[in-house]
Structures are given as structure tokens and as C-alpha cells.
Image 1 (cartoon, one colour):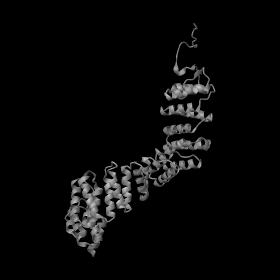
Image 2 (image 1 turned 90 degrees about the horizontal axis):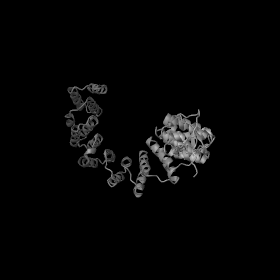
Image 3 (image 1 turned 135 degrees about the vertical axis):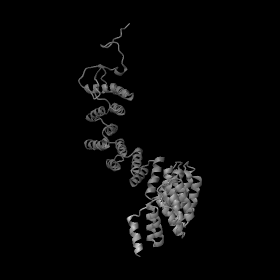
Image 4 (image 1 turned 180 degrees about the vertical axis):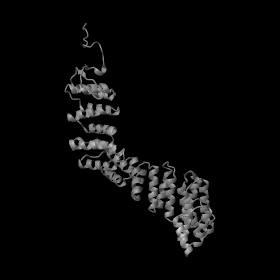
Length: 435
């Protein structure tokens, strides 16, 4: 029977160091990793060991193998180095990240994935600006067309996106094209979402057109963002076209996209299309909100369809009362003022007071305007105004319209209520008395 031969240090089994034993060395990393004596000298075998240890987050053992291979003049595969970098990055061992990266750079084995990982480490430790500076240094040192792939650019775009640095994102995009690096689906998604987030709608639309031209299919989120971008740029036809494309393709426009499109259509006077979008909201599972109704009411008023605006407001009061806000009230008061419906205007402003809304200066001015148009100035005078601002606005309005008697009466009531006129009011009243 053959006797089993044991290594010099005894009968010990160590899965992590099955090809090695400890050896004293003065070299160490920031985490004080020791080196180990390598009995196995096959680079592929040792690289696979680093790969396995990195994947299972056995950081110290992985670094010991890496340091030992470096000591013995062996070179881990770039796959092993990248796996180790990724392990160090996700566990916050940033100083060691830079040491492994410098090794790959010295050995000229770094890939786009390597650069991407070290840029992420740089951004996490020193911020976006420092990562950008480091990226520019790398650009000047390496063969960009050969070493930088779309992953590297996507990483930098993502880093800049986190701090809303859209100008650098645009520069990166231009640099990417200048270096003949083709964008990926991820590239275009990052570009569009970044530009939309920073309100750079023209750039977002340009990226979208390039994305489609290059044969990439935009997803639901991108198309919703593009509807909003077109709407904000006043390109309602293009926005509506994307909206219809989504419905045809069984995609789902979200509430924000629907509201933006309704607002854009209303501003363009396309009321029929605006209400078509509104009618599609319920089947899409969206509940119209205050912004939806505000866009519709404003659209009707802009088209001088004030009676229909009031009918819609009454429907909102009846069926969607939780969505009513001061802007909707004031839009309804605008309709009343245009139609001279002073009694309905008073009802609305009383509702506003009862609901506890504050800062009703604009609202009271609209009521006064409705009373004037209906030739009911005494009704306006009977209203107790809540602050000096409203009295000043009312007096100045009457003066500018040449209604001297009404101005005098409102001015007298203002003083009786204990409010002080501003300089403009005093000047106008003084000039009226001189006349």
C-alpha cells in the first residue's frame, strides 16, 4: 500500500490555496494582502482560480493569488483581472481596484470592460468631475479607437447623468462618433433619458432619430419620453404620431405623456384630438388628474368655447372633485368673466373661500371683471376683499378704465377696511381728484 505524501506543512486541505502555500514577503496591498508560494505555475489554472474566488467574493484569497502571480512574473488573464476588479468594486476595495488596473495597463491587456470598471471606481471615490478628468487622461494615453468601446462611453454617460451634466454627455456622444464607435441600444436609452431629464428636448429628439435610423427599437419608456419632448417643443403632430404608434404596437402611453400631449394639442387649437387622447386615458388605465383637466379647460377657453369649459368644470365638480385645485377654479372664473356670468363667478369664489384656499387675489379680480362685463358693478363693491393687494388691483383697474366713481367707492371701502393703498393707487386717485 502506497503511503500518501503530504506537503512540508502537514496534512492540511485548503480549497482556496490548493496550488500554493504561504510565503513571507514585504509586498502588500492596501488591505495588507500576503503573498503565497505558488506550486502551480500554469497561468490559465491560476487565472481560473482568481476568477472563481472573485465570483464568490473571496477577496483576500483572490488578491493573494493576484499578488503572488505578479511576484512570480506571471500574468493573470484579462478575464480574471476584470472579474477581480468587479469584485473589488462591489465590495468597496477601491485602492486595490486602481492597483489591479495599473497592472493591466502596464501589461497592455486592458479592455473596454477594464476601463469601464475603473471609471466607475473613480466616480464612486472622487466624483463625476474627477472621473471626467481621468477619462480625458486615458483618452490621451491610449489608442481610443482600439481600446474604447461602447461600454466605456456608456459608463461615462451614466456617470454624467447622475449629476445632470448634459453638456459633457453631448461631448461624449460627439467624441464617440468621431472615434467611429457605434452606439448600442443602451447608449441611445442613456442619451435620451439624460437629455429629457435635463430639459434638452432638441438633443433628445436628435438622439431618438439617430436611434431609429440605426435600426434600434425604442421601448415604452423612451417613446413616452419622446412624446413629452415633442409636446414641449410644440411639435404636436409628431407627438400624436408617436402616441398612435404606441397604441398600434400595443404599448402603453403613460399619464405624463397623455397630459403633455393634451396640453400641446390644446395650445395648437386641436381640441378634437385633445379630447380623443382624453377619451383614451380610461382604457389605458389612467385616471385624469388636475393637470389633465387644466389643459382641457385652458384649451376650451383659448378657443373661446367658454360655455363648454364651464360644463366640463361642472362635470369635474360632480365626478372628480378630488382633482379640483385653485388653478382649475381660476380657469372656470376666466370663463365666467368672459361670459359675464357674475352670479356663477360669485358661487365659485364662495366655494373657494369655504374650501380654505388662500391667496385669492386673482380669483377676486376675475369676479370683479365678470361683474363689470355684466354691468353689475355694485355687486363687485359688495364683496369684502381679503387684502390690500386686491383692493389696489381693483382701484387701479377702475382708474385705467376711466370708471372714476367706482374707483372712488372701492378706494373708500379699502380705507374703511383698514388697508393701506400702495404708491401707484395713491398716484392714480390723486390724478383722478385733480380731474
